[in-house]
Length: 392
Ligand SMILES: NC(=O)c1ccc[n+]([C@@H]2O[C@H](COP(=O)([O-])OP(=O)(O)OC[C@H]3O[C@@H](n4cnc5c(N)ncnc54)[C@H](O)[C@@H]3O)[C@@H](O)[C@H]2O)c1
Ligand SMILES: O=P(O)(O)OC[C@H](O)CO
Image (cartoon, rainbow, N blue to C red; front, side, top):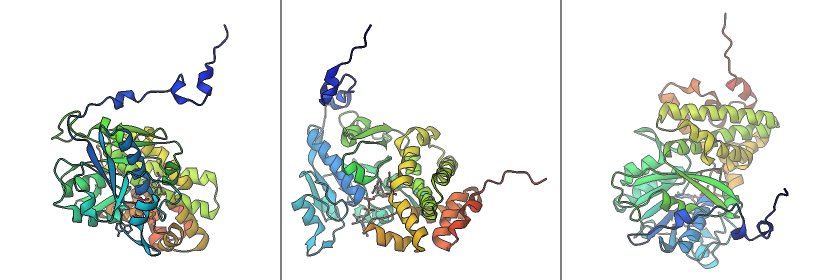
């Protein structure tokens, strides 16, 4: 018998593709309330990219979402113009996401409180060091029915110890907050090159029911695009820990790259890094699931992509090649963007020091010592050497 090839699948029309999977399961959703209104808080490289993704979906699913998406902009002058005005007239974020056309239903707003008026879903997407100040301004202005998703990668270190950013948002604003994290270099997603991500969300105690409240189906519809495949799970802690800590590992990979040590060394760093990420999760956030680190885009896939081409690796490579500090490198290379590993490695060090556990995380500690205490990068292999031979 001769194998039959369905030539329809090669004509470029995806609808005819015999293996095309349908999204109809999620699109059949009957809303029993007003369409959800969305605000994205942040307009940097990833903030603008995610706002683009969302605005495409709100227009497509206008029976579920209010098509207009507000994006709060920490406004600044570009020449004589406000960045907000440029985004609203030219529909491009010329500073943080240049040369990418943004949907016209995405409206930039420089007034934080105005931008969240009437919003049902807040999507946080700013460098994590700015979150406390934003949250402080929002306190008392967010209705209890509002739900949130944090796209930030980092931790909050405060009186409660090391905290997930989603938990911090919940504690400070009284709203349920999930997370989005994945192998997602913003410039690639913005160009609509295919990638995957993970969204994690747990239904709150006051969940209003299907069609009335945010749940996994709503979140899939909000974030999933043909070029941006979304898996929705419950493990908020797992994806948040992986997203925060891979930035520290990426700094180490950047040192390796800058020193010219090659691919084997980079792979060794990533192996050790994954081990420390999982250990950190199990030790401090036992609710996180080990399989998340292996199976989800937010786990090992994000580690790989960040260590290959992310901003943290670029900053650390530049440090190795020029001898400049992390902050100098960030300033010179990133045009106002943030390499989150610089702050995260300090937060992790301070937390581990409080717990007297720095020795249990030699890679995280080595990165901290190189970034903040001028320890030599050449000493990295010695600092992370696994000495498991018994001294007899
Ligand atoms: N860029 C990516 O590829 C990417 C991908 C996935 C996740 N993330 C994560 O998303 C988060 C946001 O990253 P990003 O790339 O959108 O930001 P970014 O690194 O582009 O940072 C620039 C943004 O910070 C804003 N900013 C500067 N000073 C501020 C202040 N005082 N208060 C508030 N905002 C201020 C700027 O206006 C600008 O919008 C980070 O935690 C990052 O790790 C980034
Ligand atoms: O460019 P980085 O290093 O901030 O990494 C960006 C994303 O987190 C990759 O998923």
